[in-house]
Image (cartoon, rainbow, N blue to C red; front, side, top):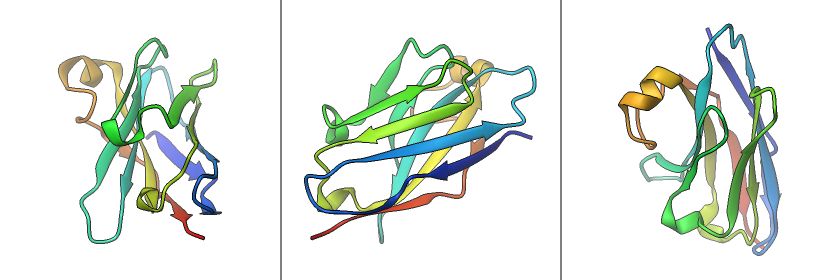
Length: 126
């Protein structure tokens, strides 16, 4: 069973930056596509970024385009989310998610995720 563990959250002032990490373990022989989701208090969880299993394709929701960057290491076992120019509305719990390559082929970039981390809190406040 694939396991995902996020880290890197914290308290940051508006305009500041953070880098979130998601370490994947028990990858076995499969390759995975990954995404970052977030859930703010009182709101539904939303997908914010995606990276394909080979790293060739990335996608972002409009609210974070130009500010956030998703990337992965060569082994495909750690996914990062670099967040710049943070705003108070970015405050949320951030979750890492993964789906197999087959499931990635059959679903849109913003759906079909089977594996989830426990989340890391990001708070943007002065």
